[in-house]
Length: 429
Image 1: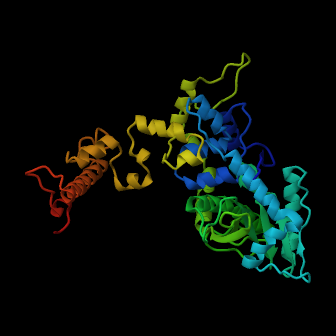
Image 2: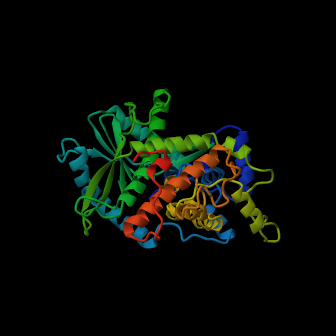
Image 3: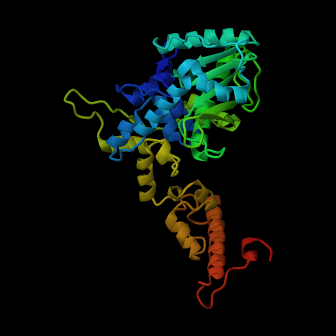
């Protein structure tokens, strides 16, 4: 479970916050949480998602207004399974959870060093809970010999002029440092789990690690280190290896997997820094762009579907098929990619291999041996003089060469034709 609420930072509203509020309109602000911040890290090049999330626009409602609602979100069955598994772990004074914690973190099993579980005021508001968590974390970090378990702590993280309140499943504090513990309901079979689910959990845990790093640096009066791969060994600072606690095989007995999240942490920091400098993206928007989802006094939408579509298309997107499982606008962006014949619809790998070929039609024409044709997509170099045109020509030649070699290997080459020699591509025989 992770809860978050965005609230403005203290003091008068800054121009950036006012501009983002204008983009959102009078509709309620959508809160950022660990999942949404992790999704930003999964596709850091998407300006569209960065702008919409920074403005707090409800992308589910926006997708429905655009005519392509997404069946997005966790399955109710998965949520229920996760809640049941977590409740079993934390029953009887966290007895089942302590087993993997002892195996991986060294939590003592005897009563001479008891595990402290302070009350974090779970029924209070997020601000009160965050203050209580900070106090409990500071107290636990000040005693290097004590073992402390913070059950559902509340963390703060500043994002684009707002404070996001984040709730990891647990923190274990010992030796002045803390370890993030995330409880997931997907199984670990024969010592390994689904890589996609582990990756998603690692990106989510990296958000918690980043929030703890900011808190530890602020408490010590120091800036956050510039290198995301370097741990600042400050009181209360987190380790960059997190612990995922999951069911073992097909039962409910827990097991734990240690995951290094330094790479995900670096990506998250980079993407959030882009959101901090999101003013540059807003400056590029045409006048009149907004994502107002509210209704007028008569109950009719304030902005028509055509107006919302124009506003959405004014912000560049970086679509890939992965977006269908991480972003509410994934189906809309896929439809646009298909209508525009963009190669992005085929995935990041294919997009990277095709170089300057931007359309599926252009790629097919190049594979068929149509020279340097780019399918009418070469905007910067239609006359063949620009760098983009040269890049597209080279990519087309290489694609035609690879296609000819494949046809020859499969024995499907037309009689009287042969693959161009590698010298045509600047290589040697």
